[in-house]
Length: 175
Image 1: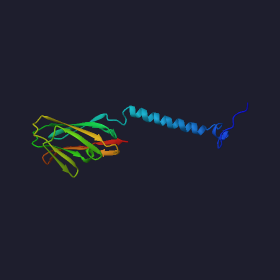
Image 2 (image 1 turned 120 degrees about the vertical axis):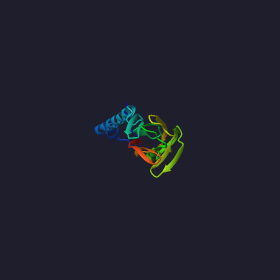
Image 3 (image 1 turned 90 degrees about the vertical axis):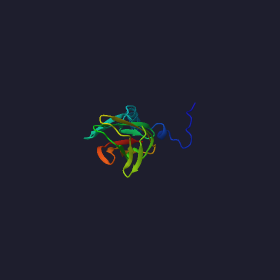
Image 4 (image 1 turned 180 degrees about the horizontal axis):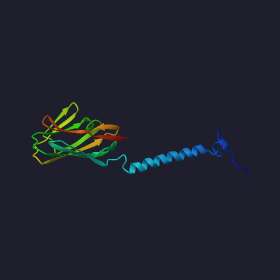
């Protein structure tokens, strides 16, 4: 019995008998890169592990607990803690544009008494805060799926229009 003949346009030397060492190594490198990316993702390198940043001023301290790395499409929550060293008549938290550009703001708890748009972000005014008291604000957001890159998510604290403290932070959004 003779060996079957290959179909038209098929060359046994080219399609079956070629060693293709280079292609085998390219496949191995690509698979290793995908495996490394998967392990990094499972290790929360691209995820929403929160970190805490803090800045203290003479009248109050701001502490932000929120992720510094996110992925498109994720829901996440940030906590903003304000500890007053003296009485604050009109505690106002100003969120940088980076909290809103490319993000959907789902909820702010507790609700501010007054919310205004400013050229560099959004100002959230709360009820008066006694000396030694703490105001904790929960900001729940969603990363829009098309958002990528670094975004400034600073937080400023004012008493009315008087600036008290400013915390600078950035968040990186991975695709």
